[in-house]
Length: 132
Image 1 (cartoon, rainbow, N blue to C red):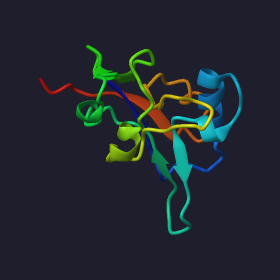
Image 2: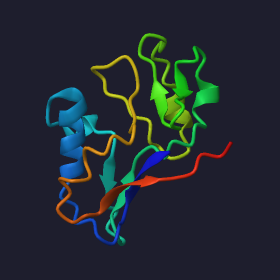
Image 3: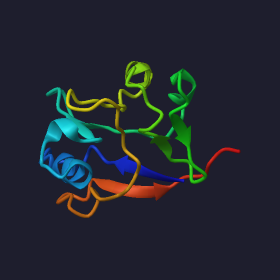
C-alpha cells in the first residue's frame, strides 16, 4: 500500500504541499481545502496531519460511503455520502477534513502530487505492507 510520509526534521513550513494539494483536487490554491495540514505549535518540529489509510473511519460511516480499495487506500464515495461528518469527528488522526462549501469530507489518498514540489524533501510516498 502506498502511504504519505513526512519528516518533521526536514520540513521548513513553506506550506507548498498544502497549496499543491488544494490546487490538484479543488483547482484553486486554498490551504483550507488541503488534505495535508502542516501545524506549528512553536514547541519544536512542524507536524503534518494527513490520512495514514488506517481504515478506522469505515465502521462509523452510516451509508458505507467509506471503503478501502484493493491497494489499501481509504476512499470516500461522494454518491453515497450524506454529509453527516461522523468520520471527521471520529478520525483518530484528525485527518478527515471538510469545507463549508462541500457536502462530503475529503482526505489524503496518497496521490503523491505534494512530494516533488516540496523544496525540503520532507515528503515521500512509501510502500507499506497491507495486513491481511
